[in-house]
Length: 54
Image 1: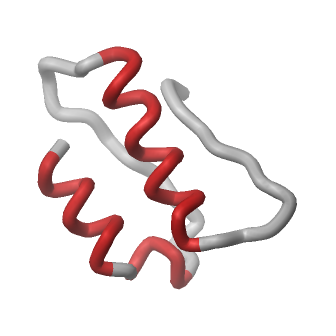
Image 2: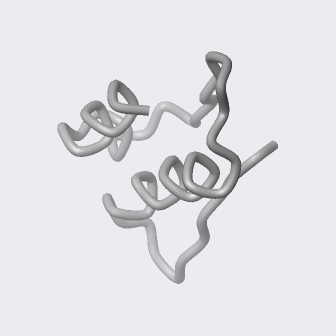
């Protein structure tokens, strides 16, 4: 595991934080695998845009 985010409630920005943090900390050169629980938070446009960018 290279990244995570926690909060007192599940919010949409939380998944963006979980994806952005390890990218900023580690700057992976190779493709990576992202695993989620497939909740509705992962279907938002913001998350899809970040995943494509990183």
